[in-house]
Amino acid sequence: MRGFTGFAIFSIAVVTVLASPLQSRQSITPLSAAQIAAFKPFSFFASAAYCPAASLLSWSCGANCNANPGFIPIASGGNGSSVQFWYVGFSPTWNSVIVGHQGTDPSKIEALLTDSNAILGKLDSSLFPGLSSSVKVHQGFANEHAKTATLILTAVSNALSTHGSSRVTIVGHSLGAAIALLDGVYLPLHLAGVNFTTIGYGLPRVGNQAFADYVDAHVAFTHINNRKDVVPILPGRFLGYHHPSGEVHIQESGTWVSCPGQDNTSGQCIVGHVPNIFEGSIGDHDGPYDGVSMGC
Image (cartoon, rainbow, N blue to C red; front, side, top):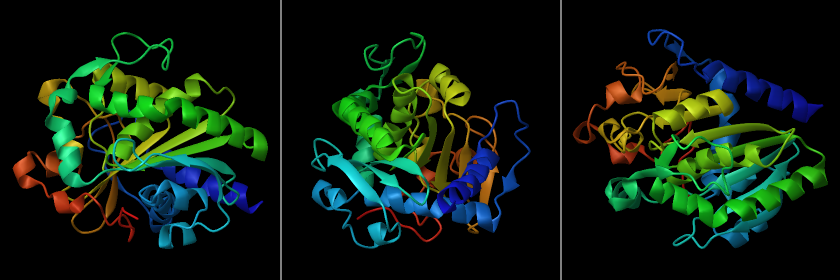
């Protein structure tokens, strides 16, 4: 029962850091060494998504793949430019289907966060049936998600059936974290009886207050920010963007803390620690996240 036990430990870590907007903003708590360690395999899964689709399909992406031996790739795609690399596979260790989304280099994510695509708009009702029209997201992220959504849905459905699993874990960094969060909303609308967990690293703001509230109510989500990374404070709140709950902030000291609520303004959390882009550091965007730096 190694897979069940391992996933149970990981689930405890995620539940611990998932924050309710009703919690006091002052109840910021450090993560234990065990809780931090529980995320590390998924940090490697997120980093692996930067590797070319062919190496992902054979799970031969060097150290990132070697860190999660036994993984069974199911499907992969993307070209690393017009379509981000992605993969779907099954981890026997965690008894979970894994979905990974590639990020992008910091200069490109900054441009995407500030160009004309940064406008908020409605989600495609054919992909996201039943969501309120008040839920709005970054149109650039929505466009990127739409390029791979149905392919990933098919691959996940096949993986669940083939391996008799009822768990899906979705990971991504940077732009990949934004796409992963949209998948965390999208996939449960089309797959019943499945337990979903989504983990984002260096996540930019994806949607408005209604989107953040929907995520809080329906998605088991953790987003991990590193030190003074500037990307998680973009696009600005003055544009109507809001982060969902579930923030974990890696402080300058290396301590990991759980920051309850949406866009917690404490100096121990990313919004308070990086009040504007001039006080942030794009060099912190790729990590390290407990020793794991993003990139193939």
